Length: 463
Image (tube, rainbow, N blue to C red; front, top):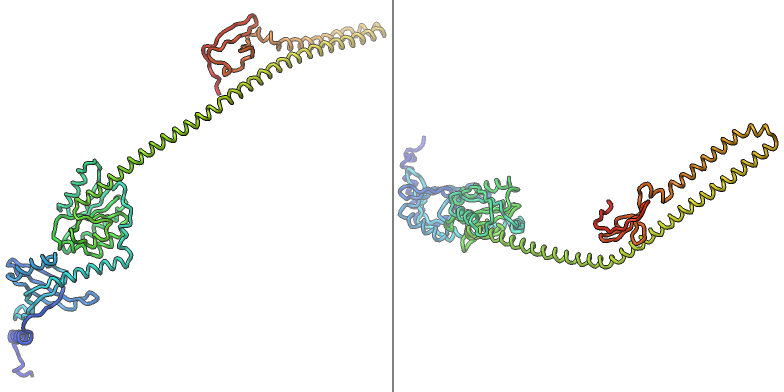
């Protein structure tokens, strides 16, 4: 059985704890912690939950804290104006607190002051750690090393649909004075607050799934405090950007500071309008380059045509005499060949006539001698041989007549009588219309007579 003197009611124990804390932990303490929750009620009191994590990001300590409304009206604006970021969840702070214990609500820390320099240092340290990690992974400049598209028409835009910056960006593209046409596609995202990371990461992943449909990617947002920029000091967002196969432009920065997202982008600008102006200027440079190439091609083509024409003219001048000479030589050879052929034909015909005459004479002599010999031998044999010899002679005569008719049929005079004619130009037989030209005077030899005429038109032979 416990001593009655050691027994306390709950309220008595609570009072004892409160008294012990007030006696043993008096005054103020500076405490560093991370804000895990933050709420401001209707009266202006700011309620926080502070945590501390170990190296594995596991929570090792947790406590409630409060900034009473009168103090909050001073501390919150001061912190935001100094750090450029509103007091919010997930940031580390250095707080001047007093420990209080309440019988109903338990232990809590009442905040009397905040050191913004500590938070600034933590934010910068976190930013530098992200940059160092990206550099050690060798991805920091991957997007900068991509080739900017010559005509960036299909543009994937990550922004909030209601953001004024998104409207400024699209209006600037649409109303450009050069008439360039662009096709921006909006991927909606939350551009500030604790949901920024998840929202932008999801938008980038959606673009990845249809990356072949886009030439360029853009992240823009409207006006905001410098504190909003810290949401873009994020490793996951930055790393995804470094893996993009297309360039990324950002319009989320301030005049003085660049976020990690700006640093890994192909190029960063201070405003969405400046992003649009850059895209338009790149299109203009491409157009000017194309016009220069067009003029260069036209000039080179003209020079080449001129050079080839000169070469052709020189070749024509050099070849014309050779061609005329060659044609003349060929014509002379043809004429000579024609004359030789005509002479050969006549000679052949004469020789055949003489040969036939000789054959006829010899056959007649042989036949007559044979007949006389046989006739002298016997009168009966003569009578028997006479019909046979008559048939033999008739056969030979028929052969001779056929030779004679063939020779006569092939003679030039008979050819002319069948309706053919011979055309002469400069006393040479014409075998092709290519040998004549309009105005040439020609002679046509017929079976009966001769025609003198002049050429008015020619039909060239088919090749």
